[in-house]
Image: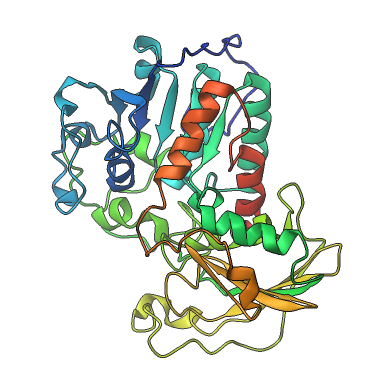
Length: 394
């Protein structure tokens, strides 16, 4: 497939039957994209996640597979024993040579859908970082591919597996605060447009054509390679306060609590006013974002009549990764690892609060491993993730 061709899932290899696992069998894992996020997740392999073995890694910048990328000096170190991994600069060769049970797809967003579909065609299950796609059409292709090749898929939306978030979501879904009238969500930032820059020397060993993937083959620039998620051709708004970064988590949390994993809004509009962001909003002093900091609220209306209002300004990372659910009989604010309510009796018997950045990955990774073995649907299956990501694109 040529770089600029759109995803075609029609002509593909025959469907491979899933491996049948014994009680003590371990998963053989490959990793596509050995950046900081991949390294962070791999630190759990062989420890908290002791049922998997990394056997191969692939990256179009091969130096990363050896832990030698100078631009990642502060990155999480590679796991002990990485010398034994097979290393590839092309994931197709990894699929041809390795007998894998699953892959972790931790590429840039703009390259993710194609890598996922190629993995599904190769007969392996997939854990993919979020947002899982760059366009709605890519997401539709991914949903079809998972169904066609009968593979297990999990998106990296960890709140789906965090006990306290699951508990709070069930409170909302089961009507503990009555019919939901509205949901207030952070008004996340959109992406920036890349402005042409003079070409810089391409790092030795980086296949820039492959890195660009489906996008325009622009001249190499280190800002584009390192900060790609800020720009709309590569993502929809960035890793943190961007709509496809934290917005994917926040809107997925809303989808989960409202029980609309297979649905979406019937109307979408903006109000003719602007929101006032807090003075300490982390990006408020960044000149690149000045024209975006005062923006119109976005309203998504469901067929039930419930309105999801993206108007809450950024406060801190916890409060931006969920929503405030206003019901007829009370209010619940679900954040990452906790929830707040004006009905204190609803907190009784809830799972423990998770400190920020602690204990959020392992339950989700374990859910994927369990589903690879059982062939059950994961907590963040492909259509669930596609629907949440599509909200961000909308």
